[in-house]
Length: 267
Image (cartoon, rainbow, N blue to C red):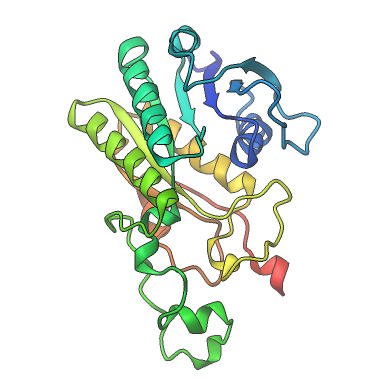
């Protein structure tokens, strides 16, 4: 790839809250990003920006592996965001996606959706100290801020959603074991409005869509330099004042540079 060639990106499930942000902000970070979005026919596009890239392909990933393999051809980066309702179907779809990538474009970079919920057992539902006090925003009652949850925290999910994300992480580690490149993004709370949500301690997990794009861009740049630690699972959180997750390692390892802070919504 030359320095002025396009970066061919495929988003699998790219009309949702995360994908719509990537389609909006990745091209602002680098105009060379050419993004194709594969999603189910009739799915709602959640992009709020009229300039978000809208090169759409109708695809039911779970039921049409042949078409999936066709559209994977020649991609520089694949971002796996799609979901199925049941845990068994979700894991089966994850198998299909990773097997197809190995078959068609094994040298591509894969950024796959995990979540902070993959490690939910370490902090959720914010009912134990010090997380209970943090969730209530009684910061003055804390003697010390807790050590951020390390990026090396092993999956400890508490429900099916976390289990499906832990399974995605296991595939990323399988790729690393055979010298292929895959990163698990432990996304925080991302929404198309980049606003508050009525969820416990949302200010700790909030992530602006622009910061999610900065993370993916950092992964790709590090991959191109040959310095990516494949199989890693990184927390993707904005630069929140009251953060309980380790994003310093993400900054140090791949140059992640989040620009937003949830306190602009809570101040």
